[in-house]
Length: 190
Image 1 (cartoon, rainbow, N blue to C red):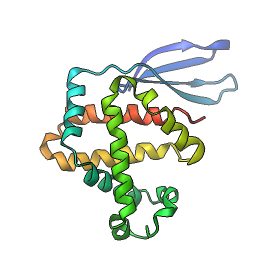
Image 2: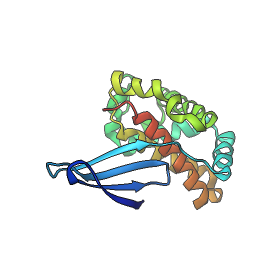
Image 3: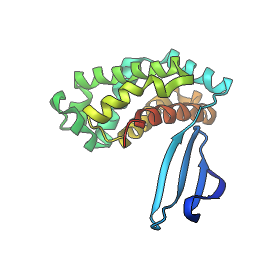
Image 4: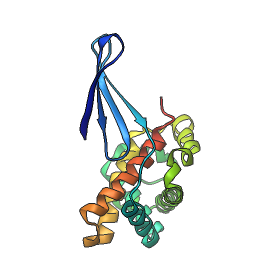
């Protein structure tokens, strides 16, 4: 993250602008009351040819059922509070029960197939996930931080699957992609 400018906001309030490699701007500063504030603003994401090719390559080789199952299992085990959204899945009492739960496996595959939509629409991920963002925000009431947790678990599973092929450059492209997807899913949250 790098600071790109220090600007004065309305009423002389300082506003720091940070630019992330993911194409998301983070605005941090203080309000007129002196309280720190942070907001995120998505802008058009620019993808390099390497990033596009890398994302396409990863997903073309991916076993959606296996990777999705392993990523969701890892998320539910490592971050047990995320289990509250899956009450209808039955037995989630321990790691073995979660890993052996067919509903966890099925939903993990659904998540990965959902990511495939972003792969096919990399220039318009925000619009691609507009309805899904509303669903998770307004109907399911999912804590938006959980998208990042699942993305982190997915990164670990993909890294273990690709082994030495998951270089720093590949990881950077993959995490940029997941950060853009996560930002799109958070879009409808207030």
